[in-house]
Length: 301
Image (cartoon, rainbow, N blue to C red; front, side, top):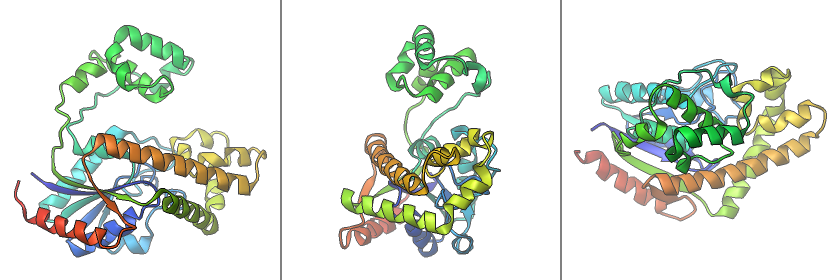
């Protein structure tokens, strides 16, 4: 099986820096596992590695599309798996780095996606309650994993059903096992330390020109409907763009939203993966993880 190293963890845990370090040390190539870094124009709010860092080792799944385009988890799965094949053929180590948990799992596990038979806007006028009720009639088993407020997943389940196969049936056909020899690290910090790192990173983004990036690409109402605007670091600017909020309030909203997201990320990683948690605040913890990495690299599977 092809080996894939995964560097996951919450926002601001140092994934990119560590991934770059390991890629240089173990002849690796980076595959971005961040759903927002596919957009060419968006650099600051996505915390994209610099051009200089990108030049140090090959990077994949960065700067794929324009910010006005949509990009689905199925698109990500296809391109990330192709990148893993390409890197492995060169006898290099694929290193998947990112915090978008569902995207990571879609690549690593035997997930099969079915192309929707209708466009998403088919259900624009439906309430979440109506979507939920319709799915209750068609595929009630799928609702065991879909919350009433998760509109996107409700719509997708309905569209899959309209394509001739129920979402629950599609998932039942999968073994929910990794298709690669995967070593997953989840970087962690004590909550107070991570909160401070998040606050510091938000401030750094502001200093780097996040406001100018937002004004440049999302100042018009039609641009604010783009999928790319829905990411944390961008959507919090909407009240400011409407003249209803200060820049300082936006910064605070971004910090709070990022902390909340980091908490959800950790919940996901604990429940969906069987990773090695690497507490970056403990002296020697990373060294011990690297020793285990070197043993894993020599193992055949």
